[in-house]
Structure formats: C-alpha cells, structure tokens
Length: 273
Image (cartoon, rainbow, N blue to C red; front, side, top):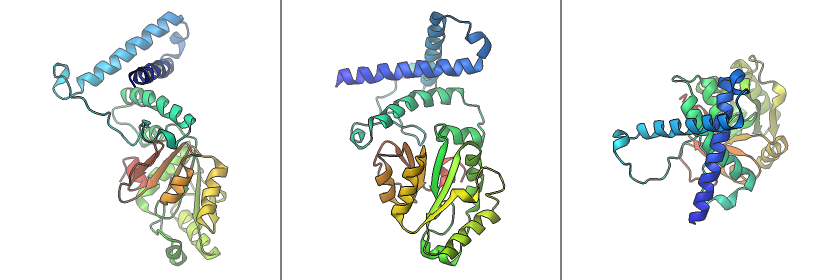
C-alpha cells in the first residue's frame, strides 16, 4: 500500500513538472526554447515549489499552523480516481485523471483573478473538443417526450453557457421524441432562442431518435470527450466508453465512477446560475 502511494505521488510530480513546463513555455515562448535541459528542470522545480508554498500560505492560520490530515477536496473540475471505483473505468480514463490532477493545480495557480466564462468552460471541460448533450431537462424546460409534444421552451439561463461551449467545442444536441411534430417544436424553440445564429451549432447537429438506447447509440458513434444527460441508466451504460460525463440531477446522486460528475443544471456546473 505504501509503495503504491509513493508511486502515485512520483507519477503526479512527473506529470505536474511536465505540465508546468508547457505552461511556462507558453508564457515565455522565445527565451524558453533557448534553455538547456537542466535549466528547464530547475525552472519546473522552482515553479513546483512556488505553487505548493502558495497552497500552504492559503491554509487557515498561515504556514505556522499545521493542518489536520484530511482527504483532498473533490471539485467538479478535478478527477481523482479512488480505489473503490477504479475497477469501473478503463486504464485510459485513470491515466487521464492523473494528468488532470497535475493540470488542475497548475491551472488554478495560473488562472486570471477574474476568469472569463470562456476560460471556465475550457477548464471545466478539460479542453475537450467534442460534446454531446440531451435536450430535455438540460437545454429545454420540458423534461419528458410527452411534454415536448405540447411545447418546447429553451431555458434562458442556459443560453450563455450553451453558446460559449459552441465557441470551443463541436457540440451535438440530441433527444428522444414521439413524433415529427416534437422535432419541429424543439428546432423552432432553439432557433427562436438564437442558438443557431452564433455559427457554432447548426440544425444538422440536433439529432432525434425514438428510444433511449438510440440516444446512447448516437453518443457512442460520435465518441465525444463529454456527454451530458439526465438519465442515470444512460450515464451508467456510457461510463466505460466516454471519457467524461455530466449528469444533470436536482438531487446530488451517489458518485458511480471517477469520470462521472453531477450538477443540478448545466449553467450551475459552470458557475452561471
């Protein structure tokens, strides 16, 4: 158990050093490439020390007060694999989670004092480039196909986040419908809300199917970095295949896998409710 913890810490430090090296190279692109390997290691080591010193100073009582042992906090933007759920996801996802542990610490240190929504979206989505999302209960106020037969209403509070996602990601919206009229209602609601005017989303990327399994099939074929859904069964089925998922639920559900997050709404996940 001790050897495993040491190995995990060593891997985290290596990933942290590699990622912070990239960050520094972005900040000083010209001079950085002229440095030799020892200088790069020295700079990375110094940055590591600065970051962890900064973390220590942020603790209550300052550096003189030794903090009590506690588990690292789990935020909606950090993916820490635990021993209890490591068997539920493939090794590739675990590796990505380890990368994110180092990346998120660096991002928190380098992020602007007042980050823009665009910065938050990129950070929360871990720079994911393709996103799939269901309509009912996430984008639309209606939550069932039966309600969609009567009307379709876009939630105004989600529009800002939705349009920001389309700037950085290839976004696909999808839903199960009972008839063609429901499709037309959903498309008309999206168009009236201005979703198609930003240029990031077109009607061809709004997909409809007749079953829940059909939506799951859409997601697997598209192979997104993120899938957003309200159906716990769909989320559970896709956990092994999709890198990250966000389940929208008014009640915080039990965490089923390290790559599955939850939020009461899409805008809440990005701090815009």
